[in-house]
Length: 113
Length: 109
Image 1: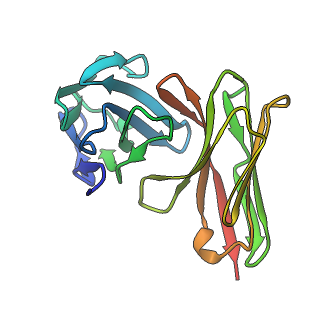
Image 2 (image 1 turned 90 degrees about the vertical axis):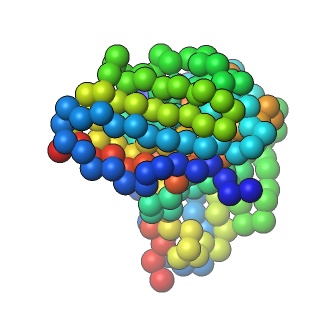
């Protein structure tokens, strides 16, 4: 298995532009998570899905952030409009029903200038 | 205070043992985890411990759990330069994981 695949690996965009981050979870994993990592705040859970259904989006910072999971093999995290304070590494992770932790993707480093 | 707390830095010499400590506030978690992050990479699960255990050993790694004090530690025996990374403690919270801010381990030769 190729693991959790995120794209792009790096994104540089101008303030006000729309940004879409993509994630392909491991086949057979029924939960998917989006995390954001910054030096100041560490790893923050933004939203997670079970069986493609959003369960908890209380970590989504503002209405500018939205996430979708149209099917079991694909999810997106969209920021519109983007702001410099959104600059961070965004990780996607997926997991099976077992409690043995998650498998993380390599992350997308977002820079908003 | 923070839900999961770790010291930020640890520096050791190659061959020594490293001990990374973590404290947490919510004792309801069934599992506690240690993750490793190398530069430019995602988080890799190192090991986990069930909350009714007080120790787990896996090759060079030893996890100790003191549930009364809500304290978790990770000991790496014979630390190598390849162990240099950020180590995250995490607790299970329902389906989600709550992470500490990570401990940067620096190993000098």
